[in-house]
Image (cartoon, rainbow, N blue to C red; front, side, top):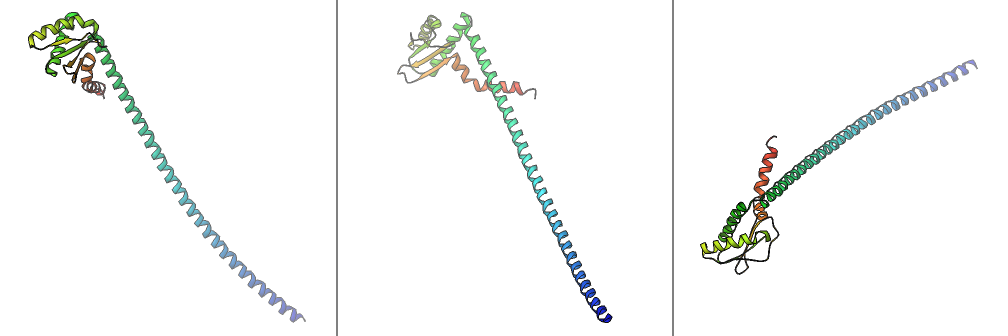
Length: 203
């Protein structure tokens, strides 16, 4: 009886030990798999974090470039506006000075402007001028008409201008604008270049 009990206990012990060994082996395998899985997750997580950092860096770079680009564009626009404002001020000042010329200087200027109109348009012409300059232009037209043997008519229709004249050909197909405003407009681009040169000379 005792022998049977011992034999049974041995079998039980053997089965239990084998079960424990198998269980331990499975636990070790599961632990190894879990560790490998954990390492894989860590690698994936590190890769994703790296991607996020790279994407963030790219976004920051793009944003920085956009900000710099916007700042440069704003600065450029501000500079262009400054140039335009400066040109406009120069024009305004020039027109004001021209409109306040003495009679002697005004007569000299009008004579030159009418001569240029005669050179620009062939044949007889009609001159338009400010109401304030009408009598003076009539006098100059009479003198220049005799000197050039060309008919120069002064219209009673006056122009709105700071000074100067407009000339129209006899058939009305050609108009030569030689007012102060028109002359300044023709040199506007040159004036703008001078303003740019002045504004950037200290850079």
